[in-house]
Length: 199
Image (cartoon, rainbow, N blue to C red; front, side, top):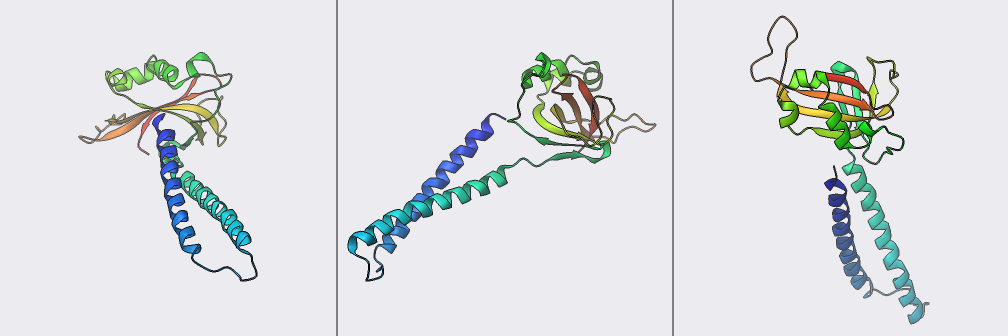
């Protein structure tokens, strides 16, 4: 998660340099064109000097908006579970209990829980999951601490591509994998969901 902003700002810088270079070339071309004869030489120079940075700034701001839209993280949905979430890495953790105060703390607490240990076995310690701070919406919550359809801030711990487990009469298909997900409410530091599914 930490590397994403650095890549984003580096891309902004590169684009800004390209825009400036393009604007400089355009200005060189424009300088060879004649402005209305009624303007004195000093007025024409001042007009060009004022117009150049304004155009460059507008181009940079437009590109920044486009890059922000492109870099937005798409929401993740588990339709079978009625759960979706949108990553919000900049959300405030003020007032969070110790186990929810950071991604590291949430993961450490996850690995102490009985459900993940029983489902994942040795993978709970050997595999590196993703830990995301997100707004979670649960349409069919399993706890009274969550209101159906109302987003809440949570840590989402995801172990991807773990062997599928069948709890029915037939075994899971050979080689089938799924995600194992744990969701911790930041406000209380309690786990609201553990489930196995694929998005």
